[in-house]
Length: 400
Image (tube, rainbow, N blue to C red; front, side, top):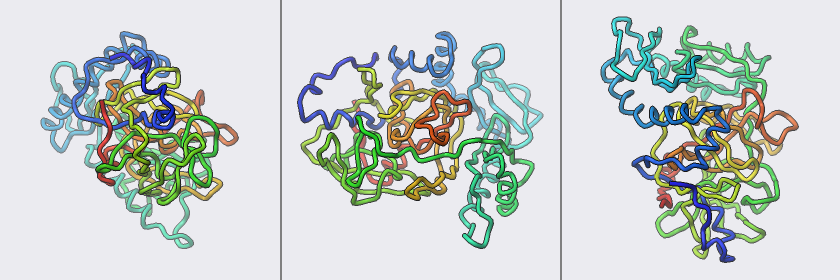
């Protein structure tokens, strides 16, 4: 379905507040259609031709079932699956296996032989997580500069990203955790992940004591209206303002470990199942079905607008650098993308090409002195998946 070009009720004054609650939640079945404006944004940001995007989206639809069948066949040797664009420009579904005896998995799937199974990779990542949790300030070495780690099926490794000068600390984290060193792969990342909340004017919501973030998805907790957003945007009890007027308060917030929050607002505000593309159009929110690895996702935030990227990792542990207010720390279970973001985009909603909500913006590797990482080589943005937020606070998302 095409993006909504107008929404008649937006003309009413009281909708000026609620019209920001576009980032709603998500249902189950995927819509077979993709809006033209979303297709255009995806092609712009991802460098895909129309034919490549069509093929990518087709594989996205088929991938969960195909990957599940491959996993059942390969059993303990299953090593992950992903969508890949080859050097020849062709888009393919890749399934990895640590079993050299398997030669084919059927039409439409390219088999790749690797050393480690997915279970072995996940076990190593879990050891890193456990080691990070057990570190004691003043006793164990700090892990400042070790930015993020996650299972990366495409490289058949646990990928650890770090500052150029932090290799020794990354190796120390690995040794302390007891993770199999052969499974780990260290990669340089020049800019630290930062929580993207700061004080900016414009379309956003503000905390009572300052600081602007972007609204995520409209939701209800029973009869109480509200929205989900990032936990680092504020603590429980803080008042929330929009357009110079108080609208509610933060009813629940967690950061670090998770990065999620629930804001309760007054009943006079209207919740709309929409996402703005910051160019005069809106997308409906149709459900919360989680996208496949390497799916196309797009995010909406008041600072940098509407940006798209690929899901290139899930269940990522991110070491978010403290900001000027001292807000930072390890956050687990984030989803990684190569879309860009800026300060103030925190909490904004992510949807896939079928208008299924995915999560809320958590952090981005923004260079010092810059308001965003858009246009930067090696840009990453991480989001907190939305379904755990709904489960944590007992919420129901507003959908079409």
